[in-house]
Length: 374
Image (cartoon, rainbow, N blue to C red; front, side):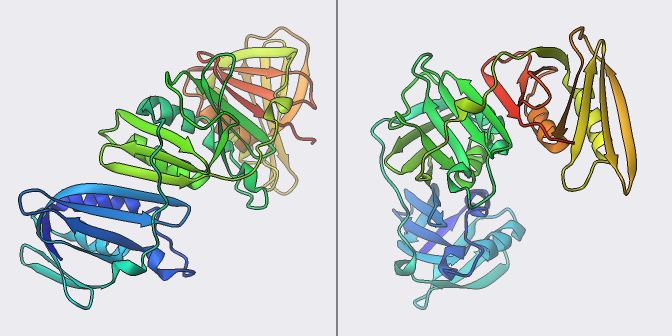
Protein backbone atom coordinates (compact mmCIF):
# COMPACT_ATOMS: atom_id res chain seq x y z
CA UNK A 1 0.00 0.00 0.00
CA UNK A 2 1.31 3.40 -0.98
CA UNK A 3 -0.44 6.75 -1.27
CA UNK A 4 -0.03 10.51 -0.92
CA UNK A 5 -2.51 12.79 0.81
CA UNK A 6 -2.65 16.41 1.92
CA UNK A 7 -1.81 17.01 5.57
CA UNK A 8 -5.09 18.89 6.19
CA UNK A 9 -7.24 15.98 4.95
CA UNK A 10 -5.38 13.38 7.00
CA UNK A 11 -5.25 15.52 10.13
CA UNK A 12 -8.97 16.31 9.97
CA UNK A 13 -9.92 12.65 9.56
CA UNK A 14 -7.67 11.52 12.41
CA UNK A 15 -8.83 14.33 14.72
CA UNK A 16 -12.45 13.28 14.23
CA UNK A 17 -11.86 9.77 15.60
CA UNK A 18 -9.74 10.58 18.66
CA UNK A 19 -12.68 10.52 21.08
CA UNK A 20 -13.92 7.18 19.73
CA UNK A 21 -10.81 5.00 19.79
CA UNK A 22 -10.83 2.68 22.78
CA UNK A 23 -8.36 3.68 25.51
CA UNK A 24 -8.89 0.60 27.65
CA UNK A 25 -6.82 -2.51 27.08
CA UNK A 26 -9.61 -5.08 26.81
CA UNK A 27 -9.06 -5.12 23.04
CA UNK A 28 -5.84 -3.26 22.21
CA UNK A 29 -6.70 -3.08 18.50
CA UNK A 30 -9.59 -0.75 19.30
CA UNK A 31 -6.98 1.94 19.95
CA UNK A 32 -6.09 1.71 16.26
CA UNK A 33 -7.51 3.35 13.16
CA UNK A 34 -8.26 1.27 10.07
CA UNK A 35 -6.78 2.80 6.91
CA UNK A 36 -8.03 1.52 3.54
CA UNK A 37 -6.73 2.90 0.26
CA UNK A 38 -8.18 2.26 -3.19
CA UNK A 39 -8.48 3.82 -6.64
CA UNK A 40 -5.75 5.25 -8.83
CA UNK A 41 -3.31 8.13 -9.02
CA UNK A 42 -5.98 10.29 -10.63
CA UNK A 43 -8.98 9.12 -8.58
CA UNK A 44 -7.79 7.59 -5.34
CA UNK A 45 -9.48 7.60 -1.97
CA UNK A 46 -8.47 6.83 1.59
CA UNK A 47 -11.03 5.59 4.09
CA UNK A 48 -10.48 5.99 7.84
CA UNK A 49 -12.56 3.89 10.26
CA UNK A 50 -12.64 3.63 14.03
CA UNK A 51 -14.97 1.96 16.52
CA UNK A 52 -15.31 1.07 20.18
CA UNK A 53 -17.97 -1.54 19.28
CA UNK A 54 -20.70 0.88 20.42
CA UNK A 55 -19.97 3.87 18.21
CA UNK A 56 -18.23 3.78 14.86
CA UNK A 57 -17.18 6.45 12.38
CA UNK A 58 -16.01 6.20 8.79
CA UNK A 59 -14.76 9.03 6.59
CA UNK A 60 -13.54 9.14 3.00
CA UNK A 61 -10.78 11.48 1.78
CA UNK A 62 -9.28 12.06 -1.68
CA UNK A 63 -5.70 10.91 -2.16
CA UNK A 64 -3.23 9.86 -4.82
CA UNK A 65 -3.13 6.06 -4.80
CA UNK A 66 -0.03 4.30 -6.08
CA UNK A 67 -0.86 0.92 -4.55
CA UNK A 68 -4.13 -0.15 -2.88
CA UNK A 69 -4.23 -1.89 0.48
CA UNK A 70 -5.23 -1.65 4.13
CA UNK A 71 -3.60 -1.52 7.56
CA UNK A 72 -4.32 -0.44 11.14
CA UNK A 73 -2.12 1.76 13.32
CA UNK A 74 -2.28 3.61 16.63
CA UNK A 75 -4.84 6.37 16.08
CA UNK A 76 -3.40 8.60 18.78
CA UNK A 77 0.25 8.28 17.75
CA UNK A 78 -0.48 8.70 14.05
CA UNK A 79 -2.51 11.82 14.80
CA UNK A 80 0.28 13.26 16.98
CA UNK A 81 2.80 12.69 14.16
CA UNK A 82 0.60 14.23 11.45
CA UNK A 83 -0.27 17.22 13.65
CA UNK A 84 3.42 18.12 14.00
CA UNK A 85 4.34 17.72 10.34
CA UNK A 86 4.85 20.62 7.94
CA UNK A 87 1.91 21.64 5.77
CA UNK A 88 3.15 19.57 2.85
CA UNK A 89 1.82 16.43 1.10
CA UNK A 90 2.29 13.29 3.19
CA UNK A 91 3.34 9.98 1.66
CA UNK A 92 2.56 6.76 3.51
CA UNK A 93 3.89 3.39 2.47
CA UNK A 94 3.22 0.02 4.11
CA UNK A 95 5.87 -2.68 4.26
CA UNK A 96 5.20 -6.43 4.18
CA UNK A 97 5.36 -6.61 8.00
CA UNK A 98 2.63 -3.90 8.36
CA UNK A 99 4.99 -1.06 9.30
CA UNK A 100 4.02 2.41 8.08
CA UNK A 101 6.70 4.69 6.65
CA UNK A 102 5.48 8.28 6.85
CA UNK A 103 7.32 10.94 4.84
CA UNK A 104 6.64 14.66 4.74
CA UNK A 105 9.15 17.22 3.44
CA UNK A 106 12.43 16.14 5.09
CA UNK A 107 10.82 14.27 8.01
CA UNK A 108 10.42 10.50 8.08
CA UNK A 109 8.75 8.21 10.64
CA UNK A 110 8.31 4.47 10.89
CA UNK A 111 5.25 3.38 12.85
CA UNK A 112 4.30 -0.18 13.78
CA UNK A 113 0.93 -1.34 12.46
CA UNK A 114 -1.16 -4.51 12.26
CA UNK A 115 -2.96 -6.26 9.44
CA UNK A 116 -6.48 -5.06 8.72
CA UNK A 117 -7.86 -8.61 9.07
CA UNK A 118 -7.69 -8.30 12.86
CA UNK A 119 -9.84 -5.14 13.00
CA UNK A 120 -13.47 -5.65 14.07
CA UNK A 121 -16.18 -5.04 11.49
CA UNK A 122 -17.81 -1.66 11.88
CA UNK A 123 -21.51 -1.95 12.74
CA UNK A 124 -23.42 -0.51 9.86
CA UNK A 125 -26.64 -0.40 7.88
CA UNK A 126 -28.33 1.61 5.19
CA UNK A 127 -31.56 3.11 6.41
CA UNK A 128 -34.25 3.41 3.76
CA UNK A 129 -35.73 6.34 5.66
CA UNK A 130 -33.06 8.95 6.15
CA UNK A 131 -34.29 12.34 7.34
CA UNK A 132 -32.38 15.43 6.27
CA UNK A 133 -32.05 17.61 9.36
CA UNK A 134 -30.65 21.10 9.76
CA UNK A 135 -27.39 20.73 11.70
CA UNK A 136 -28.04 23.83 13.81
CA UNK A 137 -31.46 22.53 14.91
CA UNK A 138 -30.05 19.14 15.85
CA UNK A 139 -27.17 20.73 17.76
CA UNK A 140 -29.60 22.86 19.75
CA UNK A 141 -31.76 19.84 20.66
CA UNK A 142 -28.69 17.95 21.87
CA UNK A 143 -27.46 20.93 23.90
CA UNK A 144 -30.80 21.33 25.66
CA UNK A 145 -31.13 17.68 26.69
CA UNK A 146 -27.88 15.72 26.91
CA UNK A 147 -26.71 17.38 30.14
CA UNK A 148 -29.64 15.75 31.99
CA UNK A 149 -28.79 12.18 30.93
CA UNK A 150 -27.65 9.87 33.73
CA UNK A 151 -23.99 8.89 34.13
CA UNK A 152 -24.88 6.09 36.57
CA UNK A 153 -24.10 2.88 34.67
CA UNK A 154 -26.49 0.90 36.87
CA UNK A 155 -29.35 2.88 35.32
CA UNK A 156 -28.49 1.83 31.79
CA UNK A 157 -31.76 2.91 30.20
CA UNK A 158 -31.17 6.48 31.41
CA UNK A 159 -27.61 6.70 30.04
CA UNK A 160 -28.77 8.42 26.89
CA UNK A 161 -31.33 10.65 25.22
CA UNK A 162 -34.75 9.34 24.23
CA UNK A 163 -36.05 10.36 20.81
CA UNK A 164 -39.68 10.03 19.77
CA UNK A 165 -42.14 11.52 17.33
CA UNK A 166 -44.96 13.50 18.93
CA UNK A 167 -48.21 12.09 17.49
CA UNK A 168 -50.22 15.27 18.08
CA UNK A 169 -47.78 17.82 16.62
CA UNK A 170 -45.55 15.69 14.39
CA UNK A 171 -42.51 17.27 16.03
CA UNK A 172 -39.53 15.22 17.15
CA UNK A 173 -38.79 15.27 20.87
CA UNK A 174 -35.47 14.63 22.60
CA UNK A 175 -35.74 13.98 26.33
CA UNK A 176 -33.24 12.98 29.02
CA UNK A 177 -33.43 12.41 32.76
CA UNK A 178 -31.22 11.11 35.56
CA UNK A 179 -33.99 10.87 38.15
CA UNK A 180 -33.14 14.25 39.72
CA UNK A 181 -33.81 16.42 36.70
CA UNK A 182 -35.36 16.18 33.25
CA UNK A 183 -35.01 18.13 30.02
CA UNK A 184 -36.78 17.97 26.69
CA UNK A 185 -36.81 19.86 23.41
CA UNK A 186 -39.37 19.59 20.60
CA UNK A 187 -38.53 20.61 17.04
CA UNK A 188 -40.24 20.26 13.68
CA UNK A 189 -37.66 18.41 11.57
CA UNK A 190 -40.00 18.18 8.59
CA UNK A 191 -39.32 14.55 7.70
CA UNK A 192 -39.80 11.08 9.16
CA UNK A 193 -36.80 9.77 11.12
CA UNK A 194 -37.67 6.16 10.37
CA UNK A 195 -38.12 3.45 12.98
CA UNK A 196 -38.91 5.66 15.99
CA UNK A 197 -42.58 4.81 16.46
CA UNK A 198 -41.95 3.65 20.04
CA UNK A 199 -38.93 5.88 20.56
CA UNK A 200 -35.20 5.08 20.58
CA UNK A 201 -32.45 5.79 23.13
CA UNK A 202 -29.16 7.16 21.81
CA UNK A 203 -26.28 6.62 24.28
CA UNK A 204 -24.40 9.64 25.62
CA UNK A 205 -21.21 8.82 23.72
CA UNK A 206 -23.04 8.40 20.42
CA UNK A 207 -24.85 11.68 20.96
CA UNK A 208 -21.60 13.44 21.85
CA UNK A 209 -20.05 12.25 18.57
CA UNK A 210 -23.17 13.37 16.69
CA UNK A 211 -22.83 16.79 18.33
CA UNK A 212 -19.21 17.05 17.18
CA UNK A 213 -20.29 16.14 13.67
CA UNK A 214 -23.02 18.78 13.45
CA UNK A 215 -20.72 21.39 15.01
CA UNK A 216 -18.14 21.12 12.23
CA UNK A 217 -17.74 24.30 10.18
CA UNK A 218 -19.11 22.84 6.95
CA UNK A 219 -22.15 21.22 8.60
CA UNK A 220 -25.36 22.62 7.15
CA UNK A 221 -27.44 19.46 6.94
CA UNK A 222 -27.13 15.96 8.37
CA UNK A 223 -28.95 12.82 7.33
CA UNK A 224 -30.33 10.88 10.29
CA UNK A 225 -32.08 7.52 10.46
CA UNK A 226 -32.79 4.58 12.75
CA UNK A 227 -33.39 0.91 12.19
CA UNK A 228 -33.54 -1.89 14.72
CA UNK A 229 -30.93 -1.24 17.42
CA UNK A 230 -28.76 1.08 15.33
CA UNK A 231 -28.71 4.76 14.51
CA UNK A 232 -27.01 6.28 11.49
CA UNK A 233 -25.89 9.85 10.81
CA UNK A 234 -24.29 10.92 7.55
CA UNK A 235 -22.68 14.22 6.61
CA UNK A 236 -20.99 14.34 3.23
CA UNK A 237 -18.25 11.70 3.22
CA UNK A 238 -18.54 11.01 6.97
CA UNK A 239 -20.77 8.26 8.37
CA UNK A 240 -21.47 7.79 12.09
CA UNK A 241 -23.03 4.56 13.34
CA UNK A 242 -24.36 4.21 16.91
CA UNK A 243 -25.59 1.15 18.76
CA UNK A 244 -28.79 2.20 20.50
CA UNK A 245 -29.56 1.44 24.14
CA UNK A 246 -31.91 -1.51 24.37
CA UNK A 247 -34.29 -0.89 27.22
CA UNK A 248 -37.48 0.90 28.11
CA UNK A 249 -37.32 4.60 28.81
CA UNK A 250 -39.46 5.54 31.83
CA UNK A 251 -42.76 7.37 31.47
CA UNK A 252 -41.21 10.79 31.86
CA UNK A 253 -44.51 12.63 31.41
CA UNK A 254 -45.51 11.57 34.92
CA UNK A 255 -42.84 13.78 36.49
CA UNK A 256 -43.58 16.90 34.45
CA UNK A 257 -45.58 19.04 36.88
CA UNK A 258 -48.83 20.75 35.96
CA UNK A 259 -50.96 23.44 37.64
CA UNK A 260 -48.01 25.61 38.59
CA UNK A 261 -49.05 28.13 41.25
CA UNK A 262 -46.01 30.41 41.42
CA UNK A 263 -44.56 31.77 38.18
CA UNK A 264 -42.12 34.52 37.32
CA UNK A 265 -39.89 35.65 34.45
CA UNK A 266 -36.45 37.08 35.14
CA UNK A 267 -33.15 37.77 33.33
CA UNK A 268 -31.11 34.61 32.90
CA UNK A 269 -27.58 35.95 33.32
CA UNK A 270 -28.00 37.70 36.70
CA UNK A 271 -29.70 34.59 38.08
CA UNK A 272 -26.89 32.31 36.89
CA UNK A 273 -24.21 34.56 38.39
CA UNK A 274 -26.09 34.81 41.69
CA UNK A 275 -26.43 31.01 41.85
CA UNK A 276 -22.73 30.58 41.16
CA UNK A 277 -21.76 33.03 43.89
CA UNK A 278 -24.13 31.67 46.54
CA UNK A 279 -23.22 28.05 45.78
CA UNK A 280 -19.59 28.75 46.66
CA UNK A 281 -20.49 28.25 50.32
CA UNK A 282 -23.01 25.45 49.83
CA UNK A 283 -22.42 21.98 51.23
CA UNK A 284 -19.89 20.16 49.05
CA UNK A 285 -22.02 17.06 48.63
CA UNK A 286 -25.53 18.45 48.18
CA UNK A 287 -24.71 21.84 46.58
CA UNK A 288 -27.99 22.98 48.12
CA UNK A 289 -29.15 26.55 47.54
CA UNK A 290 -32.37 27.90 49.06
CA UNK A 291 -34.68 30.15 47.06
CA UNK A 292 -37.09 32.41 48.98
CA UNK A 293 -39.63 34.10 46.74
CA UNK A 294 -41.90 36.91 47.96
CA UNK A 295 -43.27 40.24 46.75
CA UNK A 296 -40.71 41.79 44.41
CA UNK A 297 -37.75 39.79 45.74
CA UNK A 298 -35.97 36.49 45.16
CA UNK A 299 -33.44 35.68 47.88
CA UNK A 300 -30.82 32.98 47.29
CA UNK A 301 -28.92 31.57 50.23
CA UNK A 302 -26.64 28.71 51.23
CA UNK A 303 -25.15 27.51 54.48
CA UNK A 304 -22.18 25.33 55.31
CA UNK A 305 -21.33 24.71 59.01
CA UNK A 306 -17.64 24.35 58.13
CA UNK A 307 -17.37 27.40 55.89
CA UNK A 308 -20.11 29.94 56.53
CA UNK A 309 -23.18 31.42 54.85
CA UNK A 310 -23.99 33.25 51.63
CA UNK A 311 -27.02 35.28 50.62
CA UNK A 312 -27.97 37.40 47.63
CA UNK A 313 -31.19 39.14 46.62
CA UNK A 314 -32.60 39.83 43.17
CA UNK A 315 -35.44 42.18 42.28
CA UNK A 316 -38.16 40.26 40.44
CA UNK A 317 -41.59 40.97 39.03
CA UNK A 318 -43.60 38.79 41.42
CA UNK A 319 -46.60 39.59 43.59
CA UNK A 320 -47.88 36.15 44.57
CA UNK A 321 -47.76 34.01 47.68
CA UNK A 322 -44.39 33.57 49.40
CA UNK A 323 -42.59 30.26 48.83
CA UNK A 324 -39.30 28.75 49.99
CA UNK A 325 -37.73 25.93 48.01
CA UNK A 326 -34.23 24.44 47.74
CA UNK A 327 -32.34 22.89 44.81
CA UNK A 328 -29.00 21.46 43.87
CA UNK A 329 -27.38 24.62 42.47
CA UNK A 330 -25.57 22.72 39.72
CA UNK A 331 -28.82 21.33 38.36
CA UNK A 332 -30.33 24.80 38.15
CA UNK A 333 -27.19 26.29 36.60
CA UNK A 334 -27.06 23.52 33.98
CA UNK A 335 -30.69 24.09 33.02
CA UNK A 336 -30.23 27.86 32.81
CA UNK A 337 -26.95 27.55 30.92
CA UNK A 338 -28.51 25.75 27.96
CA UNK A 339 -31.61 27.98 27.84
CA UNK A 340 -29.81 30.36 25.44
CA UNK A 341 -32.31 33.14 26.09
CA UNK A 342 -32.06 36.52 27.79
CA UNK A 343 -34.99 35.71 30.04
CA UNK A 344 -36.16 32.51 31.68
CA UNK A 345 -39.45 31.43 33.19
CA UNK A 346 -39.45 29.74 36.60
CA UNK A 347 -42.57 27.98 37.84
CA UNK A 348 -43.26 26.23 41.17
CA UNK A 349 -46.25 24.46 42.65
CA UNK A 350 -45.03 24.18 46.25
CA UNK A 351 -41.81 23.65 48.19
CA UNK A 352 -41.86 19.86 47.73
CA UNK A 353 -42.81 19.65 44.03
CA UNK A 354 -40.53 19.79 40.96
CA UNK A 355 -39.87 23.19 39.43
CA UNK A 356 -40.01 24.12 35.76
CA UNK A 357 -37.28 26.09 34.01
CA UNK A 358 -38.12 27.31 30.51
CA UNK A 359 -36.61 29.80 28.04
CA UNK A 360 -38.96 32.77 27.80
CA UNK A 361 -38.83 32.65 24.00
CA UNK A 362 -39.20 28.88 23.50
CA UNK A 363 -42.37 27.03 24.48
CA UNK A 364 -41.01 23.79 23.01
CA UNK A 365 -38.15 23.39 25.50
CA UNK A 366 -38.47 22.60 29.18
CA UNK A 367 -36.32 21.57 32.12
CA UNK A 368 -37.67 20.05 35.34
CA UNK A 369 -35.59 20.05 38.55
CA UNK A 370 -36.47 18.09 41.69
CA UNK A 371 -36.36 20.07 44.95
CA UNK A 372 -34.28 19.20 48.02
CA UNK A 373 -35.10 19.06 51.70
CA UNK A 374 -32.85 21.35 53.73
